[in-house]
Amino acid sequence: MPHSIANVIPPSGWICLDSSGNTIEPSNATISLDNRGLAYGDGFFTTMGVIDGQILWLDYHHQRLVSHSKALHIELDSHSLLATLQTYAKQLQQGMLKLIVTRSTQDIRGYGYMPSASGSACDIWLKSSAMTVATAEPLCLPDGRSIPIQPSSAAICLSSQLSCLPLPLAGLKSLNRLDNVLASGELQGIKAQISKSNTEQSIGEGLLRDMSGQWVEGTMSNVFYQLSESPYAASEKLSTLPPHRGNANYLITGQWYTPSMTQSGVAGVMRQVIIDALSSTEYPIVIRPLQDEDLPQLTQVFFCNALRGIMPMSRLTLLSGMVVGFE
Figure 1: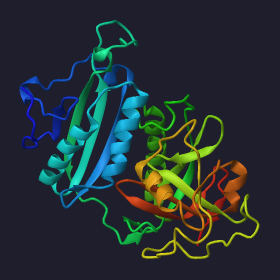
Figure 2 (figure 1 turned 60 degrees about the vertical axis):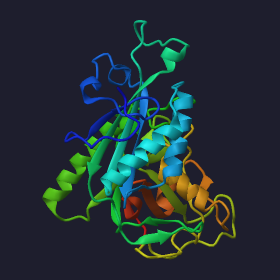
Figure 3 (figure 1 turned 90 degrees about the vertical axis):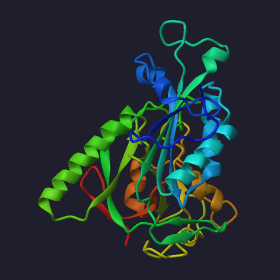
């Protein structure tokens, strides 16, 4: 029988929920080898930071639940599910909640699903992990919210590529993440080599292109950048402030750009937070492709995600070996 309130988090950290967010008895909470998330990647996930019993950026995660379930034709009660997530967040206090939603097993064989209530039914899995969520010095946004800004690190262009996807799949945080898996493996290999040489600043993130050749995002984050010359405004005031922690002007001095998510990548929660926060400032974020020819003209770069906030970069190593510095 499902429960309307959260049970005690089990040692495994995993909890099974129904489409309304009710917890399922552990004896009934089993995952089949026919699960469509396992078989086809038929589903999506979102990862939420928790501090002081509160889910960070809850409204944006709610938007993801609504938009992703609609795009994949999955039925779930997002409001009831969020209420359950908040209950588990209070129990967790500090850490991370990972929510995985998959389409329920279908009566028909193969990829297809029935255009019916059973075809839109879902299985929901929630993992609760106690951990320290990034609480670096906060950076105040123009809309009054604040996000952590991490110490500067270095980035490197990776040879791995992201797949290009049709609408409405592009931009979704679906369970099909093999391109990110391979890219993250490449990045870890580079980090291991640098660690052995012990001569370089640590690499914080890798920059990825998609199959069309446009640079889109990091292995686990979205990317924002500034250029030495604006493609849109000859009189633009460029940022000359280094990306150190506590710099209140970091996001509001000069024009920031971010690549489109219409053909590849993940439209992240923190990416949207920043876009919305700067929408009414002198320099709202401009959605613009990042091409090979732009890379030597970069003057600032940062990556971001919902758990770590803003990750400023001090330099970017290109595929050619050329290093572009930002300080």
